[in-house]
Length: 286
DNA sequence: CGTGCCCCCTGTCAGC
DNA sequence: TGCTGACAGGGGGCAC
Image 1 (cartoon, rainbow, N blue to C red):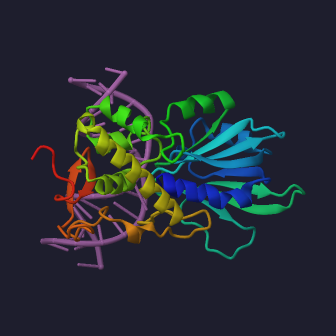
Image 2: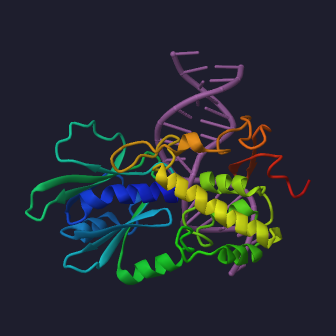
Image 3: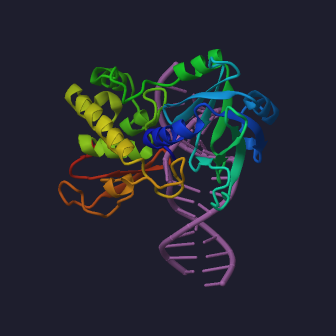
């Protein structure tokens, strides 16, 4: 579920409550979300301080250490239905329905600072604890961050030119560019006026530049709105994201295209829905 | 190697 | 009121 804007929102929401806290007393309720074994995770988290809270692609990354340096990273991929929730010590909030991992937090003085809960009904998400070298290898396996100032339209254009995949599949491939999922791929392709099934290599340079601009615009807007809640996604504080109302085509089959009023069409390929305006995004095969 | 398909799992909703 | 099938924001594995 969560794509870049949702993961970014969660990371921002965890930064203040987690930074400078210490992890202790990990409870693993569903071992299938833990990569590398429950015991290794519990032992690896125990007593480590949270130095940083970051994001890489769709992943939330906690930089941890026993001393002042980051010597482990907890990488959380939220899959389709994962949430990372911060709970205060005795907020009377109802307990989450599908907790998978619960990690205790303490202050420098050792007082309770609540808990960090990984919640995931479908359990497609994954938690992994990585050393600096395994983190580096993992991060290098992902593509560039599309919102980084160093990500230029030329990078996108050159990547597209080397692939025969449909452009939506290309955008969803985390090795090409990190953090784009089905919602924002469809939204960006709409803004760029490109049919999702267009073979990547057939997209001319000026269209690739348009796609680069559209992708960054959509992602920035969605971060601003704290992400899109369709169903499961919540911020670290349990709030919904507000970008759902701004979606132009995703999930809007039959609704008028915001640009030309033609009904939005839904097609399926690679086992996933794509939404498009058949007039603004003409089928290259037609 | 690149690409596409299936599957992991649970919840929800539409249609009968 | 069930029951069934389709579908859901992701990604790993495998066959070709």
